[in-house]
Amino acid sequence: MKIRKLKAGDASKFFDVRLMGLREFSHAFGRSADEFQKQTLDSIADQIETGVSQGNFILGAFNDEDELLGVVGFLKQPGEKVRHTAILWGMYVIPQARRKGVARELIKEFIAEVRKHEEIEQIKLTVESGNLSARRLYESFGFEPFGTEPRVLKVDGKYYHEDHMMLRLKNSGN
Ligand SMILES: CC(C)(COP(=O)(O)OP(=O)(O)OC[C@H]1O[C@@H](n2cnc3c(N)ncnc32)[C@H](O)[C@@H]1OP(=O)(O)O)[C@@H](O)C(=O)NCCC(=O)NCCS
Picture 1 (cartoon, rainbow, N blue to C red):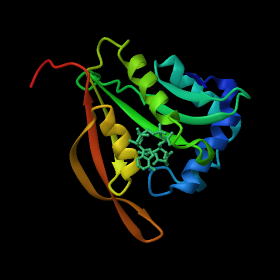
Picture 2: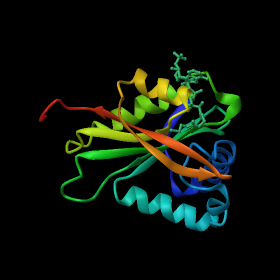
Picture 3: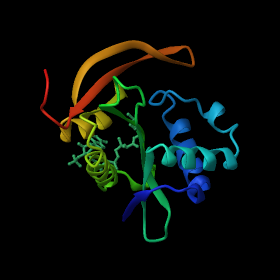
Picture 4: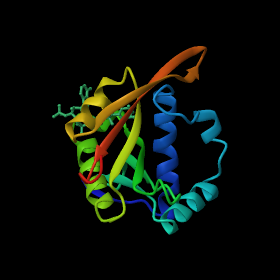
């Protein structure tokens, strides 16, 4: 397995994997599959390129056949007062590649990449409160829950809560 940052040329593979995730776990992600699939591949390629030019990235895990098995996204916060916190988003591994350590490798690499950004002191994410697999994964890297936002998502008339989690990379401050 190879982990690397996605490039504009990976737009088609990213589109397929992300859409699969949004369809399979509509209550795990804020974006709806219908909204997402209205985008063209060109616009996705643009978003990847723009993200990279702003210091953001999406990590992809590829097998020997260069198939994309899983992804995780990194988003910087540009504001002066919030740029010490980065966001982890879009963690997803395709069903046939699960429970083989793909997510673990992605997050390991993600944290190593984030540590290269001197100004970033902590990583935050949200996880649907009933998603115990993902929560265990994050906890195993030291992410700690710090609150629950009720009724964040409404999917087919049902409400879902989200837990906020944070990993502190540096122990400075309170
Ligand atoms: C959660 C998810 C990313 C895990 O990916 P994965 O590649 O199967 O995970 P790994 O094999 O690397 O497992 C790493 C750890 O995650 C946890 N985990 C993963 N799947 C689990 C499951 N089905 N049940 C319990 N714990 C699980 C375990 O702690 C595991 O460590 P272990 O194998 O030592 O027990 C994957 O199941 C997925 O894409 N789910 C749907 C989308 C989603 O929920 N994304 C998160 C949005 S916040």
